[in-house]
Length: 113
Length: 112
View 1 (cartoon, chains in turn green, blue):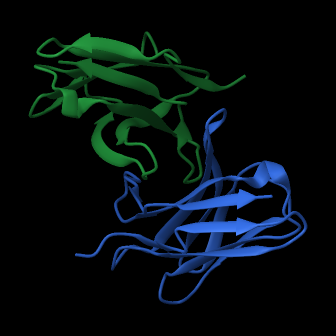
View 2 (cartoon, each protein chain N blue to C red):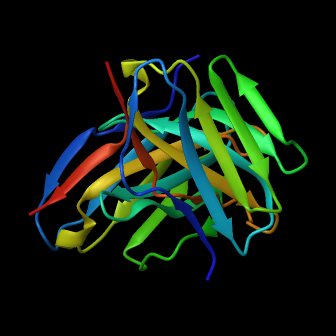
């Protein structure tokens, strides 16, 4: 079956370290993949988009990689801060999605001071 | 530019009732998507509208319906509410070809 997976367990990281979140997918040929941040009780906020022909994308302390061979995207937050604590969602747009994004369940990130 | 707005923010209904939720997209955005989010299921796609036409629909029963108006504002309706419909309902609007979503704050629906 088609699915997109993120670590269901919370990720605890010490402040200042790099946090790395994983998004794996099967049976899709994504045109691109997106990462969002969601705080409790609020809607997700778009962070980064990476296309299938891009290996890496950066924005300030954020970096996303996309490996279509491994069917995996990694999301990195360098010099992590307690304010980075949130749930991070990945979403992919399959080539034949007909305008529907496929969402992962999200990984809760906790940055400890 | 104002963000996506949703009304109401909180709603309490009883089983069997119906509910209508409203979403106003970012000005200029013609695509509006609706999602249901629950702790166990994550974000589940309900439907997407573009220029008043439903372009895609998720795997939800016919009790869930929606529409979009000429000004791109959208409503979704849930009839014959069930306890399992309790969730955060999120609306997102989109402009670009890469389908980047801008979400509203959501409507928290509680069915008693």
